[in-house]
Image (cartoon, rainbow, N blue to C red; front, side):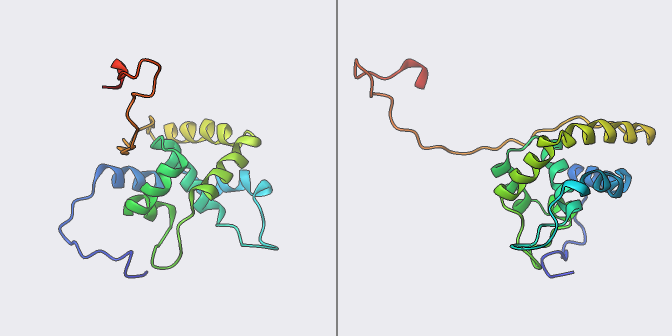
Length: 162
């Protein structure tokens, strides 16, 4: 445990996201799911060693559960201690996976149709424990600078750009 994972807030209340992730950590059969993907997951060898399979699988589920894009999820993973903790990440010990790493893992699962198999098995398993999951959304309020809309033939503003 590093200083980054320690808490100095003894009176802090657990939030819904933390409670949800704690429950998923407890009931999802991570070892069984990893066994399904292990045959196609890259092994350590030449080049940079791959991030642990269970860690990437947890990241994949987080991204799907909260309906986040790769860049949006990279930011939320850096911003949310609950998400980082669920994925087994510690900023005091190692860097978080970037959006490209997250994207490549998602593409690996999609190319072999493993992602859909996982999302068929997990809800069935959760129902045996009396649980059900629906997808959530985290709103990403990003400010985008846009040029004025007077670059048209009549040199007037587009009424839809208000």
